[in-house]
Image (tube, rainbow, N blue to C red):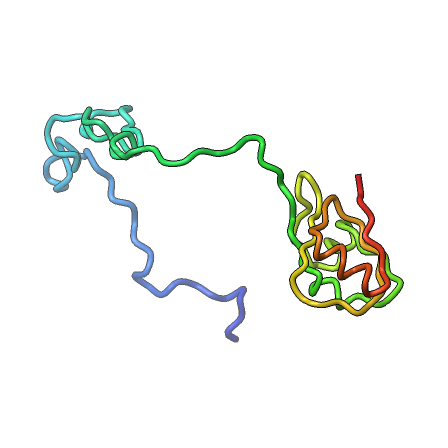
Length: 150
């Protein structure tokens, strides 16, 4: 008999039968069936919520609250000029193109913002929602164009 996936079996003694509780005192797990005596955990159908501390104020409510979330914040995906330098001259680079190339993982809710970190020498057309002043200068200095995508 060859060792094949279709012939594999567990080692004898590796699988044990489930312990049946509440089957008489002679079994060792009769009467209270391993639940102990009295209390919330000995009762059936009484789930205890995660984080419940027996009526004491839970830890997550004792901790102080910090900070806030600005619901008016803009959601841009940031890309540096140095990230755009790898594309050949004459190419049109926008958020969808960068996502297809794998340069960005997602497109922000408000689109793409190009920052001026690094250098660029290729004359490319960049379409983004926003440009920093240095990014716009570097792209135009290389012979490319920086277009605002609305």
